Amino acid sequence: MFIGIDIGTSGIKALLVDEKQNIIGSWTEPLTVRRLHPSWSEQDPDQWLKAIYHTLDMLQDQYPQEVSLVEAIGLSGQQHGAVFLDEKGQVLRPCILWNDTRADKECAIFENRFPDGPKILGSITMPSFTAPKVLWVAKNEPEIFSKTRHVLLPKAWVRYALTGIMAEDMSDASGTAWLDVKKRSWSEAALKASGINMSYMPDLCEGTDRAGYLKADLASRWKMKKRPIFAGSAGDNAAGAIGLGAINKGDSFVSLGTSGVLWMTTDSYCPNPETAIHTFCHALPNRWHQMGVMLSAAASFKWWADLCHEKEETLLAELPKTIKEPSPVLFAPYLAGERTPYNDGRVRGGFVGLTQDATRAQMTQAVLEGVAYSFRDAFEGFLKTGQAPLTADVIGGGSKSTLWVSIIASVLNMPLNKIKHGEQGGAFGAARLARLALTGEKIEEVCTSPERINCIKPDKELKQAYAENYKRYRLLYPALKAFRN
Image (cartoon, rainbow, N blue to C red; front, side, top):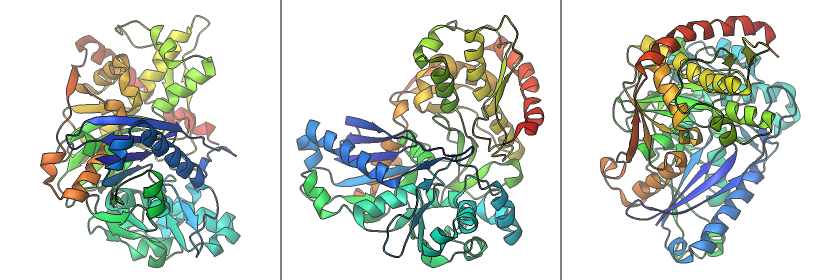
């Protein structure tokens, strides 16, 4: 038996998976985000740990026999966050999360100190990344920085709390702006540009490596017969790819979660950083990937539903079952800034084209379409690299909406596959990595493709209308740049 744990932004999800890759049980525990100022986003690491304890308590309560047989655990982690630890391993401040964009000025400082960074790190430096966050803390919280002796990503900190081992896999490490992505090793030059050195870093491993054992007292708490091993594991998007079997060149997916991702697996390191497409390590040895990222995908729809004091399902029910034409309203989903293609953490979103006759349904449709247009921005970036996806699977909570997936398919002019258990995301991939770390099986035998339950093709007429409307959408960012905060 295996457990996969996804450390998400909005919740902790754990899956209990058997040797035939059947999902035996799952539990999700919600998390809260603290936003003290515009552009800020933080979480207390202890909140993750308490949620994991409760999640596994619930699984053990419901499936005591199966949990007792767990032999390996894998982690899927929200990327880029910065957990600052002192010399005793104690947390010094709340974690600065991936969607925190306060460190935009520090990006310029980092790149001035490390001008060769983009070609080595696989991306231009973005406020979401870990390195500029360290520079921000050094400048604005010098008393914290002076005590800092380790900086860990969320997943690495969770591993440390559960095993006592500081280790990080290549896929998650790629999002720090400290990894030489081609060589798969920490870059001393990048660390120096951040005012730290190699001693601050955890050991590196591949996602399929063994990296620690569950602490004995925790194994006893969950009545496990022996201490499970931990896999090297993966960042959330790489874990999603593992769960989808996106392990070979050209394998692609769309992640419609809190953030949005367009992913394509590659078999070599081929960066094109000026497009704001990331080229990072996969969680598997000798494999990489390219990725376009938007900061507010399903988060945009959740924001709109909360603002309307409605459930998302209620808003979707107000739309026609089949979209016949684009909404007359446009929506820019820059609620937390935007990564691909603009790398602008301070631009803000908005509705455009409102009239006295505008309806809530038109605005709901505009939110769904705005997210789809942002995915099109990423797709255009892939085209500039010389290789782009031809079809893709869809994962994440937003994938439950066939209507939304159909909009994205028509905007991208690309077939999209809805899959069984698509909302499980990275937790299933983490469980697969746990299995690989334990058994050493061939990757291709474990990381098979999922059951595809529906192939949604672009609407021939709608794709033309969306292509024209996308041109209008592209005018929004230059106009909204004046409203940064």
